[in-house]
Amino acid sequence: MTSYTDINHFLPYRVPEVWILKGNRLLIYRLLLESYVITESSYFPNVREIVQQCLQMSNEQTTSEVIRWLKNFLHGQH
Image (cartoon, rainbow, N blue to C red):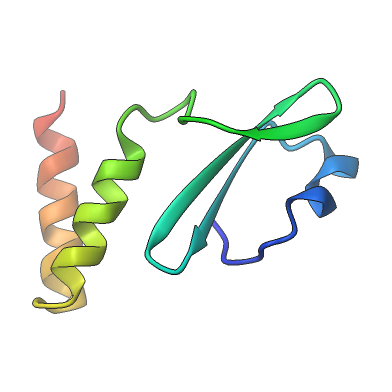
């Protein structure tokens, strides 16, 4: 994930999926032929919602608390 915003700079490297955090929004781009399209993650279902939840929690809780919640959430997914 990056806050770097020019998606075309990733084209020469053929990165299959790029996540860009823009403001409080996660943009997920997937390489399709010779360009990137905004889509959902093909690797992590619901990642957009999970990141949004973490961002909201970070306004009210410490970083350690948010990380602990995320670890517990991910362990509960199995």
